[in-house]
Length: 282
Image (cartoon, rainbow, N blue to C red; front, side, top):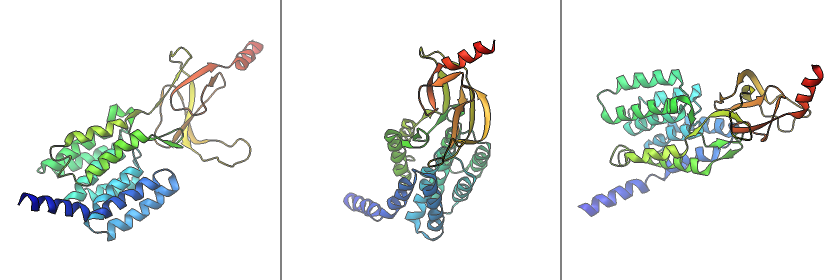
């Protein structure tokens, strides 16, 4: 009997290559904006017409495309799936709401999760996942992100992506992993956790407050002249938080950054030309 049950389990898993293929769509498309939008449309069709194995993987795929980036369209779909009649889909969607809003302190998502916790107050498994998702939304009091992309979204951290993929595979079979005795697999998420603030320091590592403009990044590849790289900008003094898709640039020429990418910890030097101009004005 033990052998038979083992065979049945393995058959269940073998009959499930579609869910892995569905997840693969997100992993391939996650590199850039246009591919992500096209994949979201594909997932909409899969949610409508796919069988149970495919639908189970759809919320996970949507979360992998929008890690720490709670777009309205995606949170709406995940919110709808979190009330799904299929328990596997509802469980995956609930945890995915946390991954999509990880470290953003998103008020709309927090309200959505509070409503979910009162909706599932009799179901301990789903209530546990709602609590985990609530914790993820307020990750590091809103100072951390799980997003594996860095350097203006041109590079991905393989280590961070590996941690997220491990959890994605666990979510395909939650009853045997996260909701059974392997709940510690959730810790793999924190391989991807990193600060999302921009801090400016001098060459000795001491913090330097610098005026910084922050706004939505604009793709200026191939444009002539010196086009604006950010839009809808707001001026702050560093350290400053950068949301998903944000880009920062120094507001004055008083300091010169050592790196061209302004994110994480950036070393800045005094601009000798700027200092000379100031003295001339005096």
